[in-house]
Figure 1 (cartoon, rainbow over the protein chains, first blue to last red):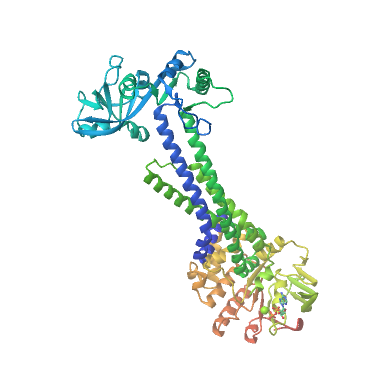
Figure 2: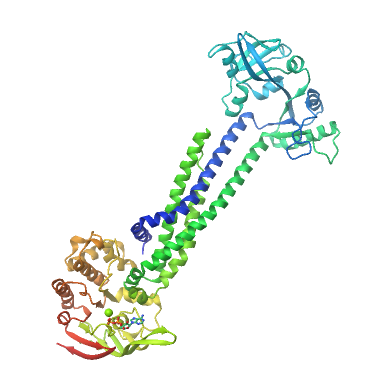
Length: 402
Length: 231
Ligand SMILES: Nc1ncnc2c1ncn2[C@@H]1O[C@H](COP(=O)(O)OP(=O)(O)O)[C@@H](O)[C@H]1O
Ligand SMILES: [Mg+2]
């Protein structure tokens, strides 16, 4: 018998008991739906983070004070990074280093006119400015000429709060405490992550931050760009080795500073998402097995109910393989339709979540293929036993069945 | 009755059904019967006398406990299930008393189904289905669902399906058992027409007026043939 015809007659049989068919599909729908939803959200998250991180550039890494979360020196920063550290790295002649950008930080109130806003004030150098590449709306960037002056580049949000929307504040004067600064530019970032920081921040020369605002040379981080990204990890190891030497850290001690690269962050996000997806896939596979057992149950009931039909089919010449295929296909049609509904619901769910969270929605094609294959396999695996029972019925027992 | 080899032959056939505990129920006690091409035979007898059992053996649906069943002279007792399915598909057309049609399936698809098992090419099928439906005067119901037609129409569809593979013999087990006498006679009329065109037909019935359509009457009582008369 042609498959097309078998599928048609399978659908007729399944529609005879539409309610039961629907309930039986539920386990499959939930299982497949949740995998697709989580996988799609995961893919969307990866896409989002990748996009964000690549806007930073993948050719540099950073050093931040304190050990990593798992080390003895975790979090605490009794050993701050200083400008001296940055200069030492720069002077150390480590190969592949393009430039070293010390970045300082302070949280302060800036006032202008009658307005006052709380901002993150970043102190950077020319090297830092080259790496961060702030995009200007008004004015100009820091130059060698003004690197010791009290000049400030405002983030767009800070600027609007202080001076109002659409106002060009270049040339205006603002104060941090008693120190007066001249606004030389306004910067704006469209990146979701960067923008949240920089649009409500202010940038001033690092030297000015150290001398006039903080009164010390502590740094928030040191950003280091490399010439060849392929050797980024090697360069990170070299720098770590250099810093440990410099700080006289014993071999068995943890570092009191941490190196991270954006590539590493990206890998972390990938790993977490992959882990999460696998976890959910694992949990869902339980739901799929439960769904599969449900399919098997219903198919067994169906075989019993349709014993006379099986007898009739055998009397008109259906072979065992014909009956087997028919019931198997019924089970597969049921799980595949359930799978497809699950895929659609999963995609809709993921789309909704992406929209609410505000990340771009990404369709996960590989998972869709996996879902289709999985639902087909479940139909085959759990449909086989009932189908074989049906096929093995003797024509006479089936016909005489009441 | 002119050919030497009978189309179907039962030689001293018995049938026992196991009841568990090593007990058996015996429904046939040595049935011997020859049916030749072109015959129209009525198998008669009271309920429980073994008529259906006999028909199931004649139709290769069941096997004798002892004795022989020869189809076109061949002993098919060693045939595999698939080979028997093929014989039923190609050589035998069944009409049952009830549950003749696939539920919620069109008349057309019901009649077409044996051709699918028989691997008849799809181009040929439609023509043959319509031809068969025309023979029983029901071609206008081709697209009706099987549960939306009357009992008499169902039996006509069953007859159309029984002849669709052009079988050697049609076996009908109380085909009029659920019908009023007018419709019953109509159905028997169609079977008679088919017989007049040369088809071999065996009808099982316990009603005399139905049996009167046949040319030969075989009476079974308690699993034994008690009379075999031709008109
Ligand atoms: N599978 C079976 N197991 C036990 N007894 C059976 C079985 N099939 C039929 N019988 C018995 O065999 C006898 C003959 O049955 P059947 O051939 O159907 O009679 P009829 O068609 O003449 O009414 C009946 O008494 C019936 O109960
Ligand atoms: Mg009977």
